[in-house]
Length: 449
Ligand SMILES: [Fe+2]
Image 1: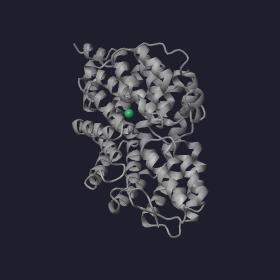
Image 2: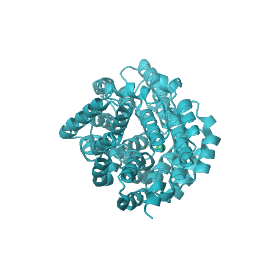
Image 3: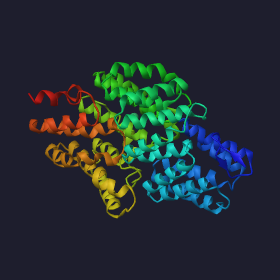
Image 4: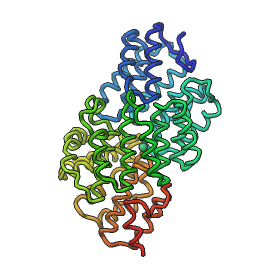
């Protein structure tokens, strides 16, 4: 029986298939871009390696794109056909893929927890659970999972640093900033290419208003990301956040064009519309426009990509960003079509996403459209009651801040200074230090006096 790098059995007779899937998982865990080719190499060596089909399906599912549904179903079908003799752990991964493919995300997470109960250092399960829970806003649950696992880890277990970076991000999103920063820095000491640990510390620094340190942090580590996946572009988005807070808009535009949405960057050439990259672009351009910056024709490439995704309900966080893009380019008819498609989905879906679209993504999308139309009173009417449910769309506190920036902007434009204190309280409750000093809320702070 072959094993992965942490000693879990892999059901294949081929040592090449075993080595390649282990490398695929290793690269996935280390945020390297070379994952799908390794799954392909594994399956080339053993086309009946059910677990490799499962891994391939889970990677595709993680890309959150409705157009990958066929490939995911194909992986699931092939895995099921070869499922005889799988270990209990592999069977649970297969069941998790099946649950994920049908939108039963919380069921998939429970299966990862089940795997971890018997295999506490199965980092693949820990990482997949965190990814799923992050995108439905359930970071308390994710923190619980990594806390349970943490007692079984020490530096003798392969990829210990990745466990620490995952644990760090759980702690950051649940407001344990000091411990999050310590573990994030430790993971980067172990491996300077650990973009997830780098990212977690960047989150702590933005939440605590340590903008100069944030720029230096990313500057010191940026040369380590050559083999990394799209997380490197998201780290550049984070660097934009620091510059934005300092009013350095030219730097933000430069980083946007060089990294975040540089369509000639190999990662964006191979997949221009990966959800995280679309979010990064839409979010940063709108943040700039909220500060009065002319972003020129930069929305156009996002518009073209979004028009192909109007019926994509794979992420309640991404869908409102699609609306941001469509509204910004005057595509109001398409934005309404997107909204109608989201509503139809939410009214029928009995999985994890439907209720989240209903409670968070739909009011956020309606607000985004109204904001671009200049209907600020409507924005306030939509977001004020929905704001305590926005966590259900998933994403980080720093990412969801976009919708509070929109609410603050509309409140100010409506001259509703009586409501400003509510938003400032929300921002501090989200974990940001000194909300009234932040660039998007400064006007809000002065309007109170
Ligand atoms: Fe982030």
